[in-house]
Length: 118
Image 1: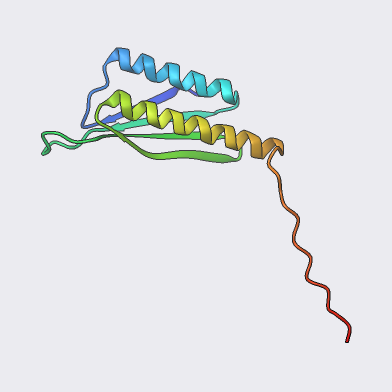
Image 2 (image 1 turned 180 degrees about the vertical axis):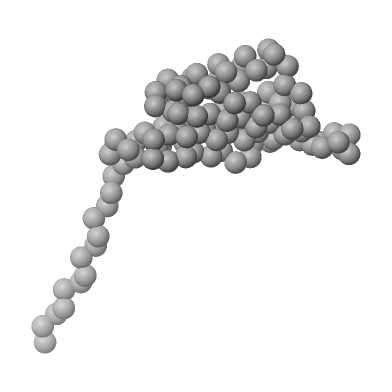
């Protein structure tokens, strides 16, 4: 990646081993497409007033000419939420690469029906 990875944690702690795992996932995305310019990973906990809740993860990627957002992936643990988010991000990056390289089929417009002569 050209710019460093940014990890934001809200209402949850991200220990150093988990930060290393997030960096490994981000480097794997960089293997799909080496021109990723920015990667921001946001992990949110359930909030201060909840005893238990779901953890959500959001990934924002900046690529040349576009941005890729993985909005919300939920899980019971931080690891589950991150695994789902990075899996979805990988699929979206692959789709972006296919579109930019022209590997996606574009169907031609259907011609209008011929008018029958009386």
